[in-house]
Length: 515
Image (cartoon, rainbow, N blue to C red; front, side, top):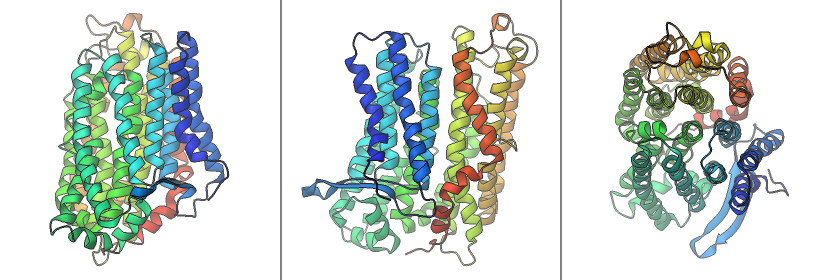
């Protein structure tokens, strides 16, 4: 779909314009800085709804395309486009970012710079979800690290410096391999256009061209791209940077990291790795399936052993995102198999996209709830630092309980639908993998219910602050209530989301034949 108004460019660059405004307003008060950051962050949701209204879900090709020559000597184009998966993540970013800024309303250390960095991070994430040429896709991918690094380092906890360095080193290390891989792809094909490369990958032409670089070519380049994306998700065992980064980051940054940035890696698997390297991914899935299961099971058991509540939710994020990779790898493993059930593949892929969106809502809400507990307790956030919070703050307890049960996958809330479809699909494709993954479900139920029982019920712990625990403020309600309402809406009416990408998923499932 073409439009005279460059809606996708506006989506990407309006937050950056807001960051520039904040950077130039040296004399702005703290309140004005917060309000401006919030207003510019809302542009994504507003423009996303405009796009949603004109979006045609029946089309599987990119819509609202903006395609212009950029660096002609390298055959690089400024190429933005949007399909159902991209739109889903744009809407998620438009919801999570304003909520995260509201959660950071009481940040008093240089709120102007905090808001500017947050808007830079928002625009970079949107660029990743909308760019269809690797050159500027990779620019957005790497630029997202800069504001995230400073948000963690300057506004984080006692271990923030080490966590920020670890986050950047891991991600840049993985990205270096991916960059080398795409340099080889460009040398072989002369293009960095994702749509053209996907066509070459589908018919096996890309593998033939890469083989011309050397017999090791397709496998080595596949591994390089895989590593860059695996670190970002993260895929077990490349996850060790995530718990300290999420735990040390300020609350709003933790919400964005888990709600939006972690989806960039899964998006890369679906947008780049799977279409470009179907045969190589299929060959690697026996190993990758076990790594995804490691994230599902070990992530949940690691969360069960945590006493730091933020680290508990961080490990929970590894567990939930590993479900997405489990579904993708199960579909890839079954590709080309006689009797492959397209219904099971469709369920698994639909569950993956729903899980990406729904986890973004529930995990962001849980991190905000932990942030409220931490602020009320003078910086403490241990599992045994609280007790009886339900009595002292019943509204907060109710909202946090809904977010927790959404993460748990309670029927009627949004978290249930994605997990159900993933297990429905994986069971039809690889029953043994689905059976092992059930261990992660049991462990998730155990640690979340333990969190609920110890923090919100029973007597106040010795030395705790439950007696002075006040209920949620107006700003905190403004941040939590929209997330909770959406958990109910998309739990009861999941077709509001699935309708955006059902034709796309059907198209994917209909082409599961190895070149």
